[in-house]
Length: 354
Ligand code: 13P
Ligand code: SF4
Image (cartoon, rainbow, N blue to C red):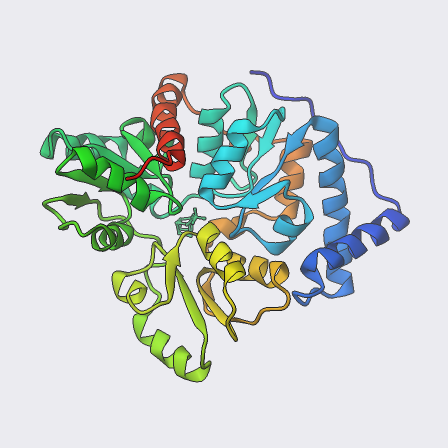
């Protein structure tokens, strides 16, 4: 497929910059503490990006860990890994400029082989995704013949191609429960913490029933369970939510565990004096702007991969994409990777009792 032509955005007029700065402020950047000069600098870029999106029939999906100016200023939709994969599969856009990390953009490409998919920050990987290769999955299958492989979406297309079903933090317990209905043993890759959390939730024995790979997320692996009690004393009544990728010790000490989408929903559905979201900091920014009436106690870490995307790189991808920003998945791999992703969609949306 040929690359789309280079398309430069016009320069916004001073009045357009002013109006765009006001829009960004209202969207929530002012509430997050952005100063006028920072809003104006961002506005010059968001105005051009939004102009080019229309001109080139592009969409910008953004994961909730992205920078606030991306989530609030240019994203067409934001969400967790599941929602982004699903919406990309349904989109009729011509090109997808994915604000997230490589495995997410690859998933979008697998589901949209005929569209141009661009990743503004080509080096945006993921420690989980990098922990396992396609050959490792084949090795697990040889060691545990007959056991189905459920793979977390945070993996390369090549690893997905070797898997039976993909899962995300939003549906892993449901899908694994279904797999256990017909299989005594299931392989889960690559997140060891999440695997241990799943074994506990499903009442399965690690190793003999649930075989788990040894990958970890550099953001979630270091949150400390001991600090939870300290924060409970400091903020009486605080509700503490943690991502599924955190350690089982921490997960055992909090009020709710789940993926980012579930965490946002839980906050929306509960009344508490304050909330703590133990995950990447982007979710806290989004929560503060989505629920301005609620109080959030900060306790987060930055993901260097997620934060590698900024407005200037998004603009570059739209105006004159570098070869390194373009996502290509070999057709044979894409074909095999698509099947377990579609199996996830079917199982996640299947409402028959597990
Ligand atoms: P979800 O948003 O799907 O919960 O995933 C979190 C994550 O780590 C993405 O990199
Ligand atoms: Fe990967 Fe963790 Fe960053 Fe998500 S937060 S992209 S799992 S390193």
